[in-house]
Length: 177
Length: 155
Image (tube, rainbow over all chains, first blue to last red; front, side, top):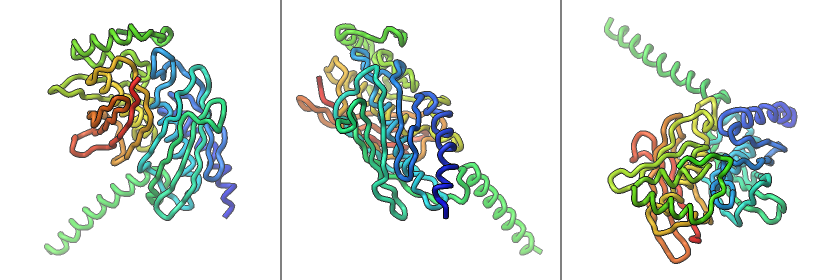
C-alpha cells in the first residue's frame, strides 16, 4: 500500500510534533533518523537539566523523557491502522552516569509488534554505542482511533453522546404521544 | 537558596549543609532548589502530616501530546525519579545525591494538563541499596496516574 510514501510524509510531521512543541521543544532534542520501527535522536547537553550539582551530570529524568519519546516514535512508525499508542510501562537500567558537556544519542527499536501491544527497546549512549549509559524496554498499547487526532475522537464521542440523548428524548416524546 | 543555572557547580560540603538545614527546617523544597532539573520541570515539595508531598504544576513545556493535551510521559517519569531521590535525602541520613540504578514505571491513566501530585515510600534501606516506590495522582490518591519503583545506590 506504498507504506514508504506514507512514512516519507509522516516523518516531517513526526519531527515537527516532537521537536517544536511542549516538552520536546523545552529539551531541544533532534530526531536524526526515522525508519519503520527504528528511530534515533540526539540531545545536546543543557545546563538547565542538571541533576547532580556537584558533577554537572544531567538528571535521570531527561534520559527517561528521551527514551520514552524515542520508543514512542518507533512504536508509531509500525502502526498498520489508525491508532494511538499510550505507554503501558517503561523500565530503565542505568549502566553508568552520563558525562557532562557531551551530547547524548538515543536509539529505539520495535522488536515485536502484536495485535494489541508493541514491544520496544532503546538505549542511550555518548561516545560508544556498545557502552550505553542506559538501556530501556517499553511496551505500548494499540488503541484504535478513527481519526489520528484525539480532538476528533473526543468531538465524535461528544456528538454521539449528545445525539443519543436527543434520540432518546425524541423517542420518549413519541412514546408519550 | 536561589541557584542560578550558570554557577551550578557546588561542592559536597555545601550540599550536605543545605540537606541538613532542610531536614531541620522541615523544608524539602530547599533540597529541590539545589537541582536545576527540578526547576526545569517545576517540581515543588512540602511536608504535610509528617509525609512529604511533591507536586508538579501544569506548564506548557511539560506537554507531550498537544492535541489532548497530556503531560509528557517522560516528565512524569522524571518527576517521580526526582521525588524518590529527594525522599531519600530528606527522610534517610544520606547527605550526597544517590545514584539511580534502575527505574520501572507503569502508566495507569493519562496525565491530564493539570497539577500532578506524588508521594514516595522507602520500602527497604540496605547498606548499599535503597528501594523506593513512588505514586503519582491528579484528582484523587485512590486513582493514581502512574506508579514507579526505583533502586538507588548509596554513595
